[in-house]
Length: 237
Image 1 (tube, rainbow, N blue to C red):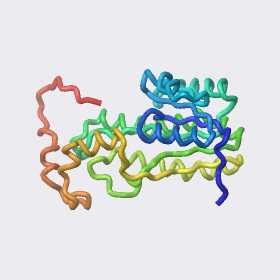
Image 2: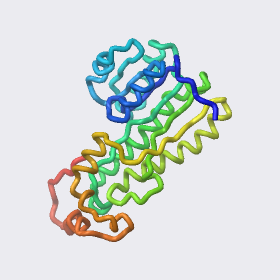
Image 3: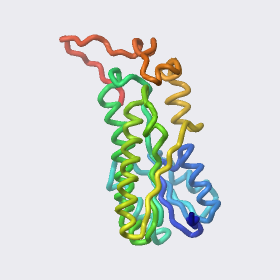
Image 4: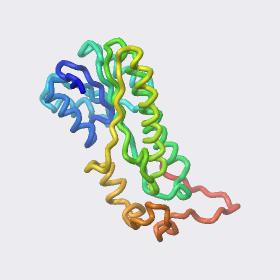
């Protein structure tokens, strides 16, 4: 397998201030790449500036906003001249729950960030990737093919990312570019600490529940019986 040389490459990475994103950005810089960090955090430019490297710049943008990503790509091109690699890393897990007990807005949010946000990232950088015969890197998960009970919307999103990668590999090959999909398991990031380790709905599930057997966690996460009375309850997104 031919190694992909990173020296002097210009890389866009979304979710770049999180655990996996910041670690990846640091490794890219250590291997000579120039990096554009994109994240929802308002202080993303300041975080990039504190890295003490002239080869990194930060942009605040929501991956659900295609125009914001277009602006980030344009600014990165102004700063470093081009984009060679786009890493669609941003994603969310949401709160652990059975699908039945998960509010519709919570499902929509996970799918919007972890599917639409990935597509937006790819499309915003696509012309640069093709022009420079570069590479798209998609962050999927082992939950693309493992039983995702307790986090079904997240698992659905990662399966969708896998299929996106399969198709892109064919499309981009025609232009001399490429696509890579990475499948991570559970790693120590804030998303896993908050969405798995500290979530009773997940931690109370016995191993057998992952094979489809319901546990006491199921009954505790069931929604109340439907009522004809109007409700003013607003479910969190």
